Amino acid sequence: MNPARLSLFQAAFVIAWRDFVAVLFSRAFFFFLLGPLFPVIVGAMAGSIGVRVAQTEGPVIGIAMSAPDRDALIAAHERLAPRLGGNLPAMRPVNGAAADPGTELTRPGANWAAIISGTLSQPVLTGPGDAIDHWQGPISLLAAEAIAGNAREFPTVTLSAIATSGAKENSGRLRTAQAAQTLLFLLTMLLAGMVLSNLVEEKGNKVIEILAAAIPMDAVFLGKLFAMLGVSLVGIAVWTAVGGALFALAGHSLPALPVPAVGWPRFLLLGVAYFGMAYLLLGSIFLAIGAMAATVRDVQTLSMPVTMLQLIVFFFASYALTQPDGPVEWAAIAFPLSSPFAMLARAAREPALWPHIAALLWQALAVGIFVRTGAAMFRRRVMKSAGARGKRGGLGSALRNLFARTPDEAQPADKVSAQPR
Image (cartoon, rainbow, N blue to C red; front, side, top):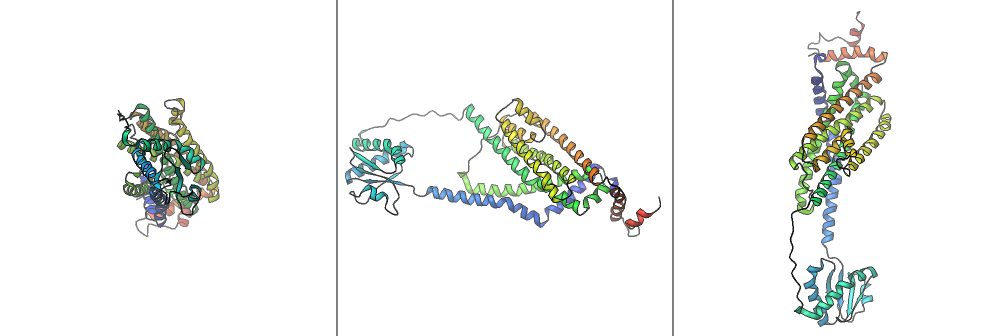
């Protein structure tokens, strides 16, 4: 089949499938998948260890009093501890009522936060200055309760709770919007670089010039963009599966985000759509950079401003969260690079769906403009020279030879170019 007869989208599909299969089944992609999993696993292990450490016994207040006073104070602590809200550590008797509090506090291996000595009517609290100032009032209350005994009754407070409030709901949705924006930014920056590395590699071994001589450059750029987008979605699916398993193991120890305004199913679908648009927008810029770069050093030099621009775009969209329905938010929605971030945050705050349809259409139009601009830049910089034009006929002939049905139909590229016109 003659590749020149392929339409733009057919040629883009051929390029996309070729790159998708080549990257997906490469050894490097396997190690690429493992890269982000290591910090997640280490973070989960560190969090689990931190929870276990937090559950170990904390500091204890020692009681160095006579047996009757000590027992009465411990009983008062057991009665009032639920009402004090954890403002006091646990209390335990010190071995030997006559022990010197200062010596006992500095004894090696001791876990005393402070020591109470004296009597119930005249308690003495020994310990660090900041701690005993904080505990002075609660211990005075305990001593009074210990002296009064069970004769003192505490009134029962009736609570009237509501499910939520408007301010709490808005605050929760803002947290969901901010978390979604951060995740979208991290995934886009992590995965969009694959487009650039793929293009630079093929420029180095002249494969891109063979493709450009056979099919429209717009189709090459579109195919590469969607191929890397498909590879990125596969990677996200793997990471999501691992993250879901870790979440299931963690149980209820992880904080739950409030439900977005559009609901979780629609919010997740919009998140996938906006990730695709953010990836295509940034990837098209990276393709244009690859068209201008001749070496890997040029790529690093040119990609740094784009990375800084993306950080500014992210902070711009985050600032738009603080200005709902204001000029800043509408500017973030209108600017193509920040539009996916701003609209995903809006999905967490507002239940309307029609603005997202309009925003996705606008972002798709911006992707088309960026792709055509990058392809035009590539044609001007790579295929404009006389040598490139002369090579174009030879490369086209070589590519047609690859698609020739029989060996007799194929001709050497130099003979084809040398034939009289």
